[in-house]
Length: 112
Image (tube, rainbow, N blue to C red; front, side):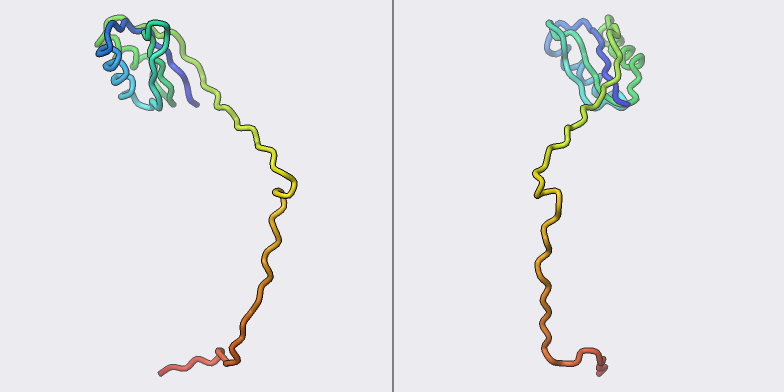
């Protein structure tokens, strides 16, 4: 079950943003990390079995103010099955099989 965790962190500069992304990416189970929000002050993490409290605690150690805004399940989009033309539903006919016989009897085994 994938989940999306959004944590608001006080990020002032680009260096702080890159450090926050690195801390979030190092957490167990994280598959993607991004910055969100109008001022790029929210770290969005998507992954499986990510501990949101431990992640927030790790961000608080570095940036003092980190608040969990939301934790929600990510539903995977099902790809709509493409409609295939009717001729594609049936496999094409196999090519005719032809055998070539050279006239020799290959059933006997000769050992030298």
